[in-house]
Length: 178
Length: 178
DNA sequence: GTTTCATATGTCTAAAATGACATATATATA
DNA sequence: TATATATATGTCATTTTAGACATATGAAAC
Image 1 (cartoon, rainbow over the protein chains, first blue to last red):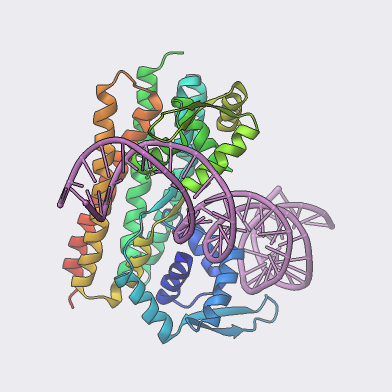
Image 2: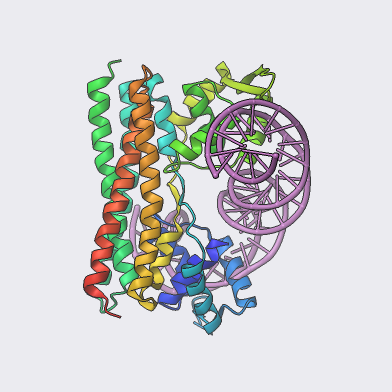
């Protein structure tokens, strides 16, 4: 049910289409939320049925028509109620890479290095996207507190991960010989 | 399907019961994996059907009987194959707290502070558990590379989160007046 | 003495999430 | 000129996950 609040949170900041939401999740929220377009479109329909959001149809002629969703009063109230009243749940993280570390004792130093390089590439990509987003919104007049906070979180998160990778590489080099 | 590999990874390190796995996820893996006992027991059954793991029944008399699972050769091979051959997927994170930041502009400084205190408590608890686990395994002869790497990751992760919370509190105090 | 927590394993239903299938035009790249 | 990517929205079947229901004893706390 939290997807609903993630969507309300995005729409609260600015009216968006389902297509926009997909991009926002991928480009600026990977380090704290994720979903797929099939789930997003379905949930948006349900939310509109429940009068939490409403849409304005924009006919584009050549490009496909789009639905721009915005919050209703009910939706805004529900979002604030949720944020203030619902107790915070633990973050749910599933990171395959850290599972892979469990078998490092069975691997060659070269294999381990390749796996680490793979995760470094993954995290560098995320960091790059977050920094681009920061640069972009800093140049705009739009300076929502939430955006500033989450962008800084994202940068800190990716940098922490990359620092750990660096340390792990060194640790492997110094402590494993095979 | 990744739950399967998370389980193989845990069992590869040491033979465990389903009950043990539940505790391991909660106490030492929250920052990179999670699952529930219902899913774990079901998956362990399927994995045994597929000959990836096998169990030894331990009759305890007074306490309930338990099944201690260990890897089969097939299971170990499959785990290594997965780790080396399957391309790394993006980490999947769902952190409600960062969703809540989107509505900070609509909240009072007091409400924001309460929300931040809630997340600080959550992360401090995780950090405390991770440090206890580090202390525990450091005192044992058991020093698996994987354990060392993931524990350091966990500490770095929680510390990063808490530092960000501290920064966020200050940012809110300096930039929001209402 | 009673309540709560730990040990230990399971099933079942409902909800959430994934990935494929489906469609159609515009633009950019090779 | 062909191919890939971006725009834009949807459905559907399968898989994964969550949370309740179910059971039973031991130990610790109150």
